[in-house]
Length: 67
Image 1 (cartoon, helix red, strand yellow):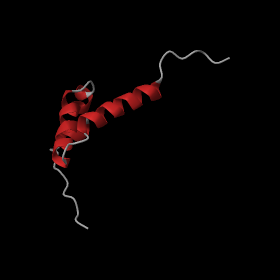
Image 2 (cartoon, helix red, strand yellow):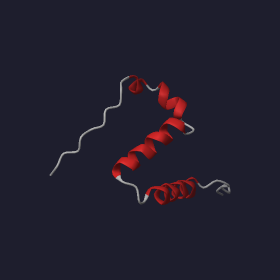
Image 3 (tube, rainbow, N blue to C red):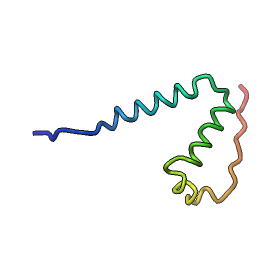
Image 4 (cartoon, one colour):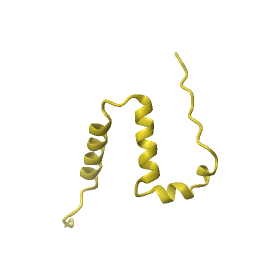
């Protein structure tokens, strides 16, 4: 018999994605990048992100190739 789940990870993920979509659906590319950078720097995992060895070097935005 399966135990009764009190937490649905998939439901939580979908709700978070829906909120991000609603917050950013009218953003330009630059606004979207700023949004995610801000949340990466201030969110619940910011301290872990700052300790990452990859964060020792400066972040340089990649240039998009024009097709």
